[in-house]
Image (cartoon, rainbow, N blue to C red; front, side, top):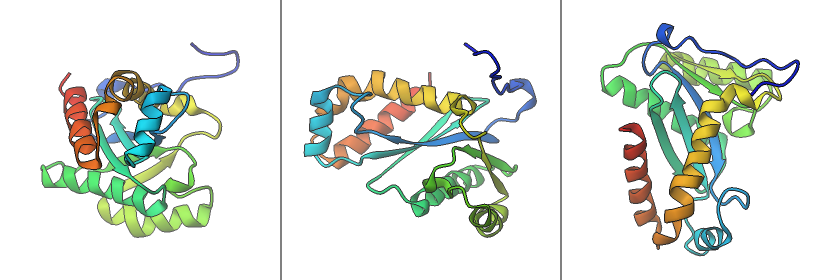
Amino acid sequence: RTYKGCHRRLYIWEQKDHLIFFQTDLKVVRDHKGIPPEAYRHHEQANLPPYQWTACCVRTRARFLAYSYEKTVANGLAFMTLIVLWLRSHGIQHHVNFQTDWGEEFGGKSPKKLASLDRRVFKPLSATLHRIRKGRTTDNAMVERSHRSDDEEFYTPLLTRYANTENFLLGTFRWQCQWNLR
């Protein structure tokens, strides 16, 4: 649904190659609005990773997930670098684009910092980091919708089953496989 004066960014899916353009975001798993109180408490008591890094291909809807205990630029860069290296190791050599919000975990708002990251990290990998328009979370709607599915279809019904990080990561791997093979 669009609102008066707001336009959605549209993608012409047929003109985009597979695994070339990713909407990327960070999700806080321990979210009062997203999961029920018992799942929230269990997640906290089991000391499971609180951050989910998500990259969603706009053409294929394939997702890459990673988890961390810290919300840092280093983790954000490591996540995107890992995706590019995985693509390269599977013979995908085209230029890769990541679209993110303006969060500090993806380089923040400083033009100097963004230019430095682009020059030192992304250009050697044949990748580019793009920003959504300020205040337009709908520009990253695909990845945001996938976060809602995570809450409704995975965390809410299954989170309390995982007693430790190892089991949790195994469960999230199965969830990612299920998502990508739908």
